[in-house]
Length: 355
Image 1 (spheres, rainbow, N blue to C red):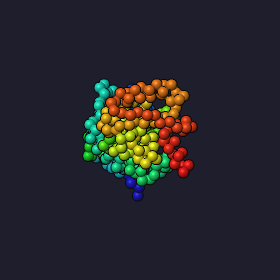
Image 2 (tube, rainbow, N blue to C red):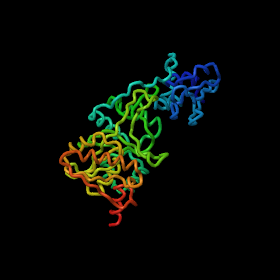
Image 3 (cartoon, rainbow, N blue to C red):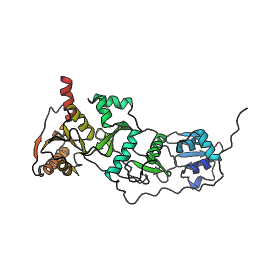
Image 4 (cartoon, rainbow, N blue to C red):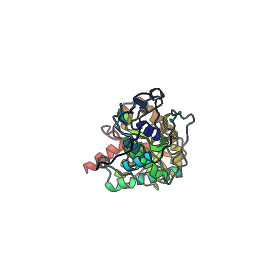
């Protein structure tokens, strides 16, 4: 005998999920709502269509579709059975959520020790996909060093990101941690798909995370900080461009380059040479303090060779060079190589491959 389920109005389910409904359409057969699954969900955007006759939903932008139970299950990260029981266990009327209010004051990140604890917990729940592992191996890293550096793949679906935030939030406060924000009163994770690169200070603590994007619209935009800065990201927190330190921190000679992954790779290929890595040629805040804290006596400039053809990059590197040369007691030199290899990591890999 077929099991008979209680009818659950799609609009009620949407309200339980905290979706924003278009008040002008509430008396229509098709009610418009904000979509919790696609990226275009700002104030006044109603891509989700709620069919009140069939009690089904469909997003006209991302194509997500289903019924009342599947909508609630996807948004809350529960099973269909749990979702059905939740939706039918009471008759409480849930009011219409108000439109998101943009955050007016920018929230600052929590202290370093707190960020390190949260990010370490977060990475412990994640894995590295085979695709991303192959990418790192092709750069010259070993499996052992990949594991040691702690690279992880970003969770790709909204359900996975909400579950991750729920797991981490069970032990730590997420407010003030760049990358986390609330959507429909649930914590989730921001950022594009790709793999995560831990950015560490001189003591190995994770200051922040950078993402190597799977898909970049421009070659120069292949990397992005994990951040939840934006008017549509409630309770989100901005990220700063922190200085990354990698390699043998007891050495008195440090190479200076751009990009944490570049530094990780180059350090490994150069027998754990000490590398200090800025987040970009213009992102030198904290560089002087990092050099002084490490106690190095020599800095070897190892910036990308595109400075030879890009005057803006060249000017930014010149500004950085002058700032470092102001530090008392520091010997400064410049490392050059065949310009056919853009980065110092590419050049070191070519030398290792030729052996």
